[in-house]
Length: 226
Image 1 (cartoon, rainbow, N blue to C red):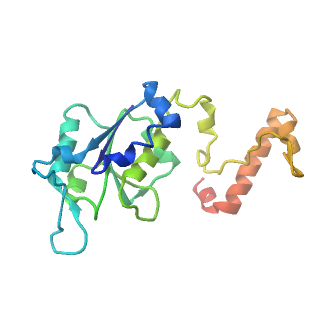
Image 2 (image 1 turned 90 degrees about the vertical axis):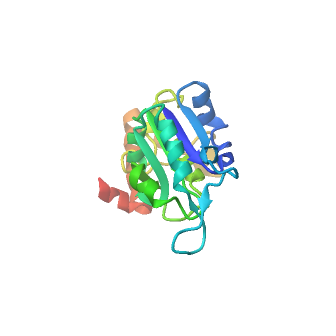
Image 3 (image 1 turned 60 degrees about the horizontal axis):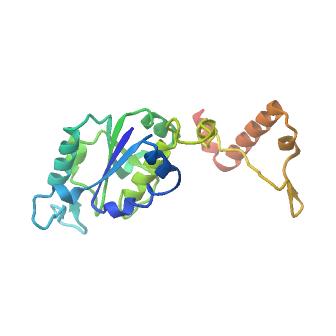
């Protein structure tokens, strides 16, 4: 898989892909992540990428020309399965969307900034708009990193135990059950006996029951989606 991220502040994306699981996945050639500075496609000598909005109002708007030039340049080199715009008014990102995106080969992610991008970019070039929550960030970079992380960890070979991704929260509309590790007792708090029993079927049943219970208590709306 290849993920291309378009940004006006690419430095914000240096850290997320330079550590831990994502770094190892890139080093192992399981995924390619390329961050592009939209300013590189600006024809203005000052590398301008924003301008005042027509009709007035506060804030600046990302200009159509450098964004489209960047998209078209990259698209001339390969076919993209999705060109995603990170936007507060996009569809709310969830695990099923991450699962579907992890099956794609080439994904482009455009990070908004300022007051957003010229609407003509969204109308003509964007195939999908995604939001990571009902709140506003300073830009789409952190949101793009969240989406990329959730996709990459699903790719074969990225996680040491490939079954661990299948047991994550939300994979079956349930939250993950409680987890424990050594010591078996800490300050009078004990690990549930079933987890020490060695009976796989009983452990699986306990984990499922705990997932359902936790989901009912904390995120009951997820059960309505089953």
